[in-house]
Length: 120
Image (cartoon, rainbow, N blue to C red; front, top):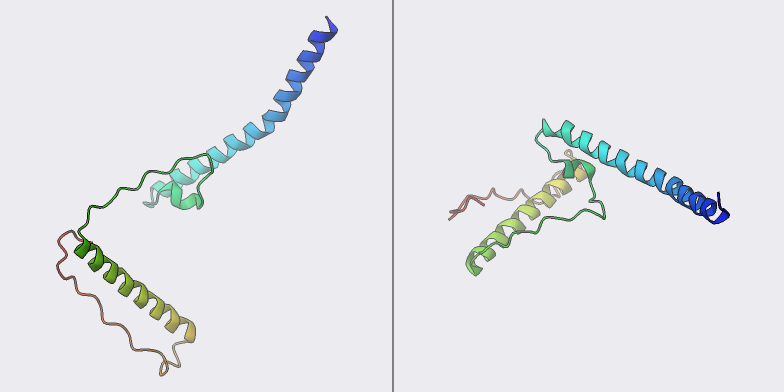
């Protein structure tokens, strides 16, 4: 065998051996994600929620733009802000302890569904 061909074969083999562990790790990661997705399928959660962060190579679905009127957008914004404020208040109450509630602000009244045609 010629020296040039032998060097070329050795170079190709070394390249394959370097790429082998990367490919193997990638396939194992895909297998774990698929198994986690299958395990969560029965619980009603998607595999994206179980893996946490997205992998850099995967593409995200494009978000659908909502066609809302400015009035409805403002209404939803106010409702969400009230919900977040209520959540912050309950978390603050839970952190401060249930024994000393005299300094905590009174609970926010629950939101009543007003003019909710779209169910949001």
